[in-house]
Image 1 (cartoon, rainbow, N blue to C red):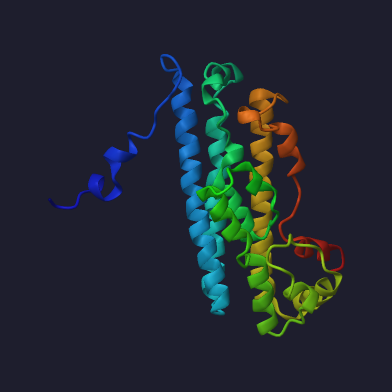
Image 2 (image 1 turned 180 degrees about the vertical axis):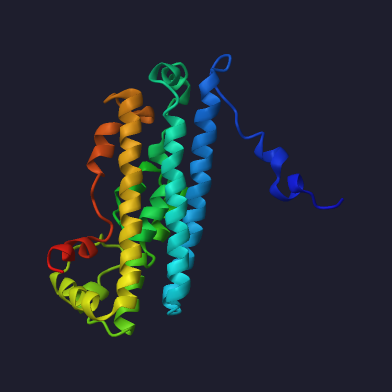
Length: 260
C-alpha cells in the first residue's frame, strides 16, 4: 500500500489515545488530555533539540548551535501559548472530572525532568518519585550522570579562549549549577571583547528566561484552576510550583548583568 499522510503520521493510532475516564464523559476532559499529550510531544522535541545542541557545541559548530537554540525558543513560545487554551477551562469544569485523575499528576512527567537534567538543573530528588528499578528512574539516572548543556557550553568557551576556572569546568556532572565568581570575571571580559561568543550567551539567557516564563504561566494557571489545593496525585500543587519560580538555570549569565 502506498504511503499516505495518515499512515506516515499514524493518525488512526494517534486519535485512539484520547480516552476520558469521567462519566459522560465530561466535555473538558478531552481538552485536558489533548493539551497534556501535546505538551509531552513538545517535551520530546525539546529533548531532541537539546541533545542536538550538545552535539553541535561539542563539534564547535556555533552557527548550528545558535540555530538550534532559536528553534528551542520558538517551541517554548508555543508551549506558553498553549496555556491560554487550557485557561479556557473553568475551575468548575476541571472539578467535574478531577477525581477521575486519581494518582496521576503532571508532577510525574519524566520527560520534563529529563529536560531539566539535560539543561543542568541536576538534583537526585525527582528520582524518588518513581518506583525503584523502574524504567523512569533508570532514564533519569542516566540523564543525571550525563553532561549537561551548561557543562558542554563551558568546555566550548574554554576551547575558544575564555579562561574558565577549573572549579567550574571540572565540577561533577551530577552537581547542580552554582554561581562561580571566577567564571563571572571571565564572562564579563568575554562580553566586552568577543561579540560572537556573547551572542551565544544571550541565546542561552533567552532560553533560561523562556523556561522561567513557562513556569510562571504554569503556576498561575494552576492557581487559577484549583487555588492552593493539593495537586492531583498528592503533589504539592501551586505551593511547590511557586518555589520553582525565578530560579535561573544559568546563574552566572544573570549575575554578570550588574557588572557589565
